[in-house]
Image 1: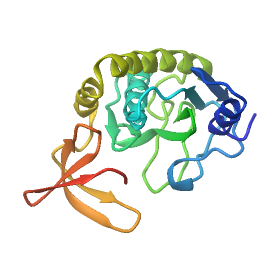
Image 2: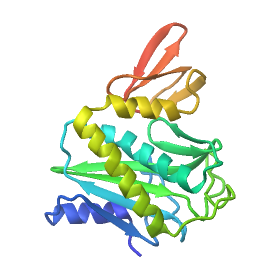
Image 3: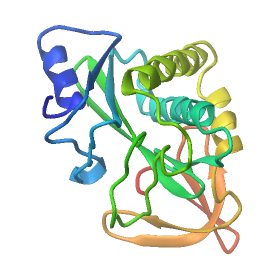
Length: 220
């Protein structure tokens, strides 16, 4: 039981650890999501963070490796569910949020935080959530889920190191929900609507607004 797996990764990094090493908790008291949101970490769910030494300046692209690894893991345990990915770093099952990803970094380190709703999911969230159990799948113990997740992340990480972002981009788009459909992109100071036209070569969202492509590097 700790505050959060991401905070544990930060402490390890500040103590000199460079990884790769996973931190995980059966219970978190201060789990967090993007933009400072609270991440509800119910007992029986997976909360884990990978600490790595970022090998490239484009290490933010590892959020796509994480999403693909989570999608692979979810598809293994819930083969009947429609597993899709949502830009920039969510994984959905049957259109509801199953997992979230949070990247944090400091000098010489990167923490890839992942939360997967295995046994339970929060009610009343802005974007509807779900869990493996709610999908009718037998939720695995968190340690078993982490074993598969770590292996799948290693696969996508190695591919990224060897071939760059393009294989991850293609695989992510193959799982993307809403591709070619109307979406809203929410930025800190504005919101834009258009058709989800894909990702650029760096992972930014491409939004088609009546024939004009808007490139959105950060948002949701």
